[in-house]
Length: 148
Image (cartoon, rainbow, N blue to C red; front, side, top):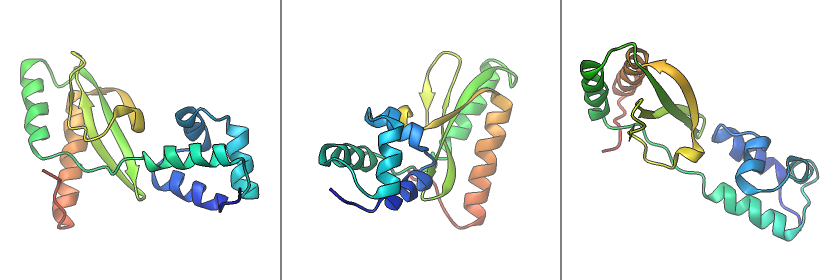
Protein backbone atom coordinates (compact mmCIF):
# COMPACT_ATOMS: atom_id res chain seq x y z
CA UNK A 1 0.00 0.00 0.00
CA UNK A 2 1.27 3.49 -0.85
CA UNK A 3 0.45 6.73 0.99
CA UNK A 4 2.39 9.99 1.17
CA UNK A 5 4.84 9.41 4.04
CA UNK A 6 5.64 13.12 4.38
CA UNK A 7 2.10 13.59 5.61
CA UNK A 8 3.05 11.50 8.66
CA UNK A 9 5.98 13.81 9.40
CA UNK A 10 3.75 16.86 9.00
CA UNK A 11 1.10 15.45 11.32
CA UNK A 12 3.72 14.52 13.92
CA UNK A 13 5.28 17.98 13.71
CA UNK A 14 1.93 19.71 14.05
CA UNK A 15 1.29 17.78 17.24
CA UNK A 16 4.79 18.00 18.71
CA UNK A 17 5.55 14.29 18.40
CA UNK A 18 8.47 12.33 16.97
CA UNK A 19 8.68 9.03 15.14
CA UNK A 20 9.69 7.47 18.48
CA UNK A 21 6.52 8.85 20.08
CA UNK A 22 4.40 7.43 17.25
CA UNK A 23 6.15 4.08 17.61
CA UNK A 24 5.35 3.98 21.33
CA UNK A 25 1.75 5.07 20.75
CA UNK A 26 1.08 2.68 17.87
CA UNK A 27 3.07 -0.38 18.91
CA UNK A 28 5.00 -0.38 15.61
CA UNK A 29 8.77 -0.14 15.66
CA UNK A 30 10.38 3.17 14.71
CA UNK A 31 12.29 1.59 11.81
CA UNK A 32 9.04 0.50 10.15
CA UNK A 33 7.59 4.00 10.49
CA UNK A 34 10.79 5.62 9.19
CA UNK A 35 10.66 3.34 6.15
CA UNK A 36 7.02 4.26 5.54
CA UNK A 37 7.91 7.96 5.69
CA UNK A 38 10.91 7.68 3.39
CA UNK A 39 9.47 5.29 0.78
CA UNK A 40 5.73 6.08 1.01
CA UNK A 41 5.23 2.32 1.19
CA UNK A 42 4.24 -0.11 3.87
CA UNK A 43 2.02 -3.02 4.74
CA UNK A 44 -1.69 -2.21 4.76
CA UNK A 45 -1.98 -3.24 8.41
CA UNK A 46 0.92 -0.91 9.33
CA UNK A 47 -0.68 2.03 7.46
CA UNK A 48 -4.00 1.35 9.16
CA UNK A 49 -2.26 1.28 12.54
CA UNK A 50 -0.43 4.57 11.87
CA UNK A 51 -3.55 6.28 10.51
CA UNK A 52 -5.64 5.05 13.42
CA UNK A 53 -3.09 6.39 15.90
CA UNK A 54 -2.77 9.74 14.14
CA UNK A 55 -6.56 10.09 14.02
CA UNK A 56 -6.61 9.82 17.81
CA UNK A 57 -4.41 12.89 18.24
CA UNK A 58 -6.56 15.33 20.16
CA UNK A 59 -7.46 18.91 19.48
CA UNK A 60 -5.98 20.86 22.35
CA UNK A 61 -7.59 23.87 23.94
CA UNK A 62 -6.16 26.30 26.45
CA UNK A 63 -7.75 25.70 29.83
CA UNK A 64 -10.42 28.05 31.08
CA UNK A 65 -9.23 31.01 33.12
CA UNK A 66 -10.67 29.43 36.28
CA UNK A 67 -7.54 27.25 36.31
CA UNK A 68 -5.62 30.33 37.46
CA UNK A 69 -7.87 30.55 40.53
CA UNK A 70 -7.39 26.83 41.19
CA UNK A 71 -3.59 27.23 41.12
CA UNK A 72 -3.80 30.34 43.33
CA UNK A 73 -5.93 28.37 45.79
CA UNK A 74 -3.37 25.57 45.87
CA UNK A 75 -0.60 28.11 46.54
CA UNK A 76 -2.64 29.54 49.46
CA UNK A 77 -3.07 26.04 50.92
CA UNK A 78 0.59 25.11 50.58
CA UNK A 79 3.33 27.27 49.08
CA UNK A 80 4.34 28.81 45.76
CA UNK A 81 7.49 26.67 46.03
CA UNK A 82 5.62 23.33 46.13
CA UNK A 83 6.32 21.16 43.09
CA UNK A 84 3.79 20.28 40.42
CA UNK A 85 3.78 18.93 36.89
CA UNK A 86 2.65 21.05 33.95
CA UNK A 87 1.37 19.31 30.83
CA UNK A 88 1.63 20.82 27.38
CA UNK A 89 1.08 19.87 23.79
CA UNK A 90 1.34 21.18 20.28
CA UNK A 91 -1.79 21.73 18.25
CA UNK A 92 -1.30 22.77 14.62
CA UNK A 93 2.14 24.12 15.62
CA UNK A 94 0.84 26.17 18.58
CA UNK A 95 2.36 25.29 21.95
CA UNK A 96 -0.32 25.18 24.64
CA UNK A 97 -0.01 24.58 28.37
CA UNK A 98 -3.18 22.62 29.07
CA UNK A 99 -3.07 20.95 32.47
CA UNK A 100 -1.46 20.85 35.88
CA UNK A 101 -1.02 18.00 38.34
CA UNK A 102 -0.57 18.88 42.00
CA UNK A 103 1.48 16.86 44.48
CA UNK A 104 -1.73 15.10 45.60
CA UNK A 105 -1.90 13.76 41.99
CA UNK A 106 -5.11 15.67 41.19
CA UNK A 107 -5.15 16.93 37.59
CA UNK A 108 -6.81 20.17 36.53
CA UNK A 109 -7.40 21.72 33.12
CA UNK A 110 -6.83 18.77 30.79
CA UNK A 111 -9.32 18.35 27.96
CA UNK A 112 -7.45 15.29 26.63
CA UNK A 113 -5.74 12.15 27.89
CA UNK A 114 -2.41 12.92 29.50
CA UNK A 115 -0.88 10.18 27.29
CA UNK A 116 -0.93 12.64 24.38
CA UNK A 117 0.79 15.42 26.29
CA UNK A 118 4.35 16.28 27.18
CA UNK A 119 5.28 17.16 30.72
CA UNK A 120 7.40 19.57 32.68
CA UNK A 121 8.24 17.91 35.99
CA UNK A 122 9.29 19.62 39.19
CA UNK A 123 7.90 23.03 38.29
CA UNK A 124 6.99 25.15 41.29
CA UNK A 125 3.38 26.22 41.71
CA UNK A 126 4.54 29.82 41.37
CA UNK A 127 6.24 29.06 38.05
CA UNK A 128 3.17 27.17 36.84
CA UNK A 129 0.93 30.10 37.73
CA UNK A 130 3.24 32.41 35.78
CA UNK A 131 3.15 30.09 32.73
CA UNK A 132 -0.63 29.82 32.67
CA UNK A 133 -1.06 33.55 33.37
CA UNK A 134 1.32 34.47 30.53
CA UNK A 135 -0.58 32.14 28.19
CA UNK A 136 -3.94 33.65 29.20
CA UNK A 137 -2.56 37.17 28.73
CA UNK A 138 -1.10 36.33 25.30
CA UNK A 139 -4.39 34.80 24.19
CA UNK A 140 -6.35 37.81 25.41
CA UNK A 141 -3.97 40.18 23.62
CA UNK A 142 -4.43 38.17 20.42
CA UNK A 143 -8.23 38.32 20.80
CA UNK A 144 -8.44 34.61 21.52
CA UNK A 145 -10.33 33.11 24.40
CA UNK A 146 -9.89 29.78 26.15
CA UNK A 147 -12.52 27.17 25.55
CA UNK A 148 -15.10 26.96 28.31
